[in-house]
Amino acid sequence: MKKITVIGSGFAGLTAVRQLRKLSRDLDITLIAPRDELHYLPGIIWIPSGLRKREDLVIPLGRFFRRMNVAYHRGNVTGLSEDGRTVETDNGSVANDGLIIASGGRFIKKLPGIEHAITPCEGVDAAEKIRERLLALSHGTIAVGFSGNPKEPSAMRGGPMFEFLFGTDTLLRQQSRRENFKLVFFSPAEKPGNRLGPKAVGRLLGEMKKRGIETHLGHKLKGFEAKKVITEGGEFDADLIMFMPGMTGNTWFDNSVLPRSEGGLIKANGHCKVEGMDCVYVAGDSGSFPGPDWMPKQAHMADLQAEAAAKNLLAELQGETASATFKVELICIVDSNNSGMLVSRTEKSNTMLPGSILFHWLKRLFEWWYLRKYR
Image 1 (tube, one colour):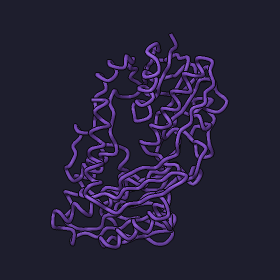
Image 2 (tube, helix red, strand yellow):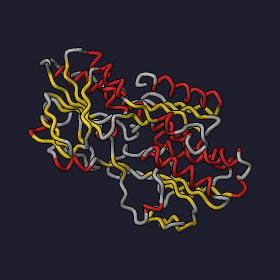
Image 3 (cartoon, helix red, strand yellow):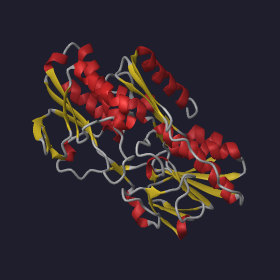
């Protein structure tokens, strides 16, 4: 029986497990992660408003692992040895015949004073901290922004920041205290949201103008202070700073022979196979893949890559041609707590539909549908 190891309990890792088990019951699968939980990060945008709580978004995986006949190895990966055939962790080593890396990315936190900013996509804890900070503020300036990894165009996550921005505006209006706050959106990009498509930039900036949200765009970030955002184009006060930096690879990659892109991610081909390595594949935020520079780092893309990685790993183990590819597709609903804008982009088309309460409820319905597989 072939031994397959999957690193990570996020979207890519769990989709890889489901795909592997769909293709074969005759596999010895081990999943390595620090915790046997799925944290559904798309839902954290609703924590500050109370639409979601921690228990709604943290899904225990014990039952899922039993259904999938997966062995769970609790631990933090520290490196690879034997060209990927052994995964080293702080809780022992795990041998494999095939490996799928889906351990996510790491936010680049090099800006001076970045500890004064909250990075929402770090998880539920960060979203709860935003909720508490908003509750504690009676007035002031709230700054929301993001940047990228200049050496890895796809390694950014800007969509959630638009959602935190618009969601905060909606929440303050619902609480009848919006007039007590100034909202500022900032980014070193002159056209933030351009990866969503040319139409998206105008729509997003138009939405900010309609809501009375100020912008500070096109200026390189220099750092933060406790109540200040500092850029090369000036600085401004902020009582609460939400900021999403660009992403790079996990620190444990350094303790391996994994090939790295200039931006620090694992270099892979269009079949999700790690370059120059046998039976080692990557999916999701950990990987650098060929494709357009707008290729998203989002759950949907991670799922598509994980399916391809699982199919190709199994084919390689069976001595067959690993030919599965993944579609480059961006699909998201930019939610604002009571409405949402639908964005879709492929290499052939780009669509953005204006805000509607229907899309808000569609996003909530999708969450229920997606999580029922793991509950």
